[in-house]
Length: 398
Image (cartoon, rainbow, N blue to C red; front, side, top):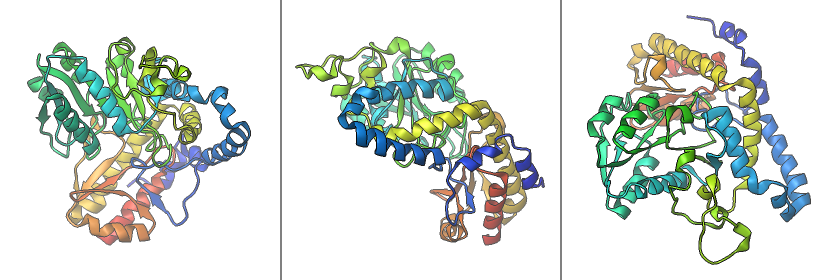
């Protein structure tokens, strides 16, 4: 077994760990795929924003650029992490609200097509939102049944997508297994049938290189509190391909999406471009951390982050095979790097009872029913020694 200290010594991203705030009593944080650690720079930015910008500028801050943050941060996020040209990404709302906005816009833009394709193991929010839209619009949901250990395969999509399909919605990285979908090929299949494609990027943004423009993605939504370290409840982001802006109309018509917000006039007239995806007042305070996080990701590069992510999850798989499988643990994540996202899942009956003793020992993984323990190392803040210590503790408890 490779020495974790040797792996850390050879890690070109190791110095980034010092930029994160340490957690008292936590020896191994393996849940970066659920909530990222805060940067030291984030604490400084929040203090500076509150004490200087908010306190001193007050309402004048809106004219200092706050109103443009949803667009400027969206463009920067698109360039650094999403492979999206300017004018297509906005930061706003929650993942759930943005999924509703874009999905409703998509199905309304394909009148006469009554089917929406999704998979049975997608994240609950995605499924619940589409169930609600189907009830609103009289649509039929077409379910692709996938194994929780894997994810959606292009061949499965090809079997069910046809001229009746308005939209497909899948996750780039499956939240349970970590399966990395073949976005470009699934897009090709859906587009040949005339359907729009929408992707949930929550478990890939900031961890896996994404090429929304190059892959021909129509719509995408993701969160910023996992690998992008935006903090609990940080705002989400939405992507709409440039040539669809103006053709698709999101249904939550708020004043920030109006062509002239401060005219306060009668009737809704959508703004041009990606601003039309906005609805209410931007969550400015909650956007502050994203400035620091994008600085760090830009410096590190998403390619280097992905390279370390694969090393971390490969190391975790090696430890699991040697230490945990003999104790009845099953690995339920892809072993092929090209099909694996940034986390792996271990399965064994009774794992839920181990959460409290793991936390007491300073080891924090993530649990997903039934019997799944997710190991989600965040490449910029997690060391190989942390992974070694966490799985060693788990072995001892087993």
